[in-house]
Length: 68
Image (cartoon, rainbow, N blue to C red; front, side, top):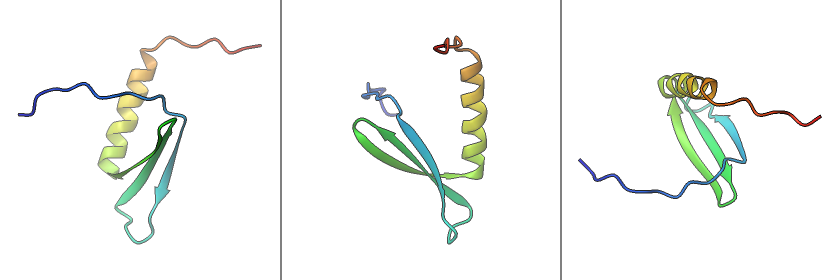
């Protein structure tokens, strides 16, 4: 098993899901940070798990007050 290592973390500025009509079983997830863009390929199963995990984590975070 690989040792755990610290990786740099950057705030996500934007994201985009990009379908590929030639590969209907995957979608590209583009994430933009101040450091540039990263592109990941994800299957339906990964997207479903990621969506569920993100919603569960968001529910545990404090609600940010919106400016008036």
